[in-house]
Length: 353
Ligand SMILES: Nc1ncnc2c1ncn2[C@@H]1O[C@H](COP(=O)(O)OP(=O)(O)OP(=O)(O)O)[C@@H](O)[C@H]1O
Ligand SMILES: [Mg+2]
Image (cartoon, rainbow, N blue to C red):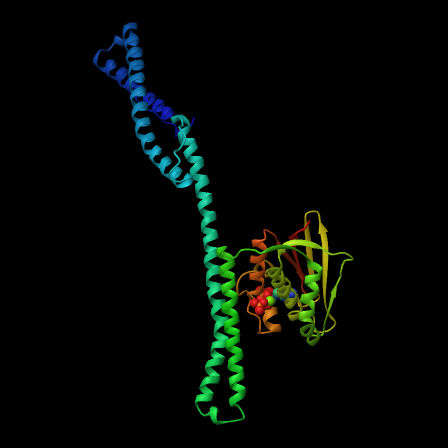
């Protein structure tokens, strides 16, 4: 028997009341009219009056309980439903007897949803805190450098030919770094707000890769990294924004050089024909990325400890821009990595027909 059902509750109450009435009836008759209990009339009276009392109390309890409970629950149900479906939609009509079960189920579901939302909000809050920490760290370094150089120059360094020019050059470099951070952030916010229009065209991704590799050749040689491109025999046509994809390739290949192996470093670039897309993979044999860092390297200003140990130059913005550019193309980027073995970044582009 479900006791949260008003029908059952009313039945039980009526049963108790008529039971108590019957017992009192028997006791009173036995005291007031001894011997009357042997008359069938007394028992008939008892049965009829108890049955009547049972019916009256059962119906009145049921009516009052249902009216009271349902009016309260309907109100709760309506508020939950309004939060869930939004103000414009009205909850569908439900029969009262299923209302309590439905409300219970929906409240449980609601509770689970709220718990999930709270978790997500906590994660976002944590991400926001880390983001601000990382951003101030990246901005602080060049700003403190500039402050140091300018103070030294003002405190007499300006008249010292041994350092005056050198310090001005260093100041300029730090300013350039600040400008690049602001430019990258500007690009990210424009990509995020969806204000950037893609200038789509059909082009050969292998030819564009060759241009990017030529551009980064000097840097690769300086880091003793050999770049191997598995060029196909015919052009690989894709449909995308050529300049934005140049940005993507430059960022990923630049990372493979920056975080590449100190000795016998290689960066290998391969193209794969997936039915509707072209997958470009860039593999290095560098420092690698810890499994815990893998999903986070696309966040703004996120740098791995290994990455920071290799160089202080990174801003942690390159991959965030790359991801946004590919998302604007409705394409994907993925990364796999093993410490001491290397890292592979792969991104898809729509095939150009
Ligand atoms: N090929 C790679 N091998 C190992 N770690 C990498 C590789 N590519 C990226 N990372 C890690 O991911 C982090 C984020 O990369 P991202 O390109 O966004 O920033 P960055 O290279 O530090 O700076 P920039 O904004 O100048 O590109 C890097 O700091 C590094 O820790
Ligand atoms: Mg980078």
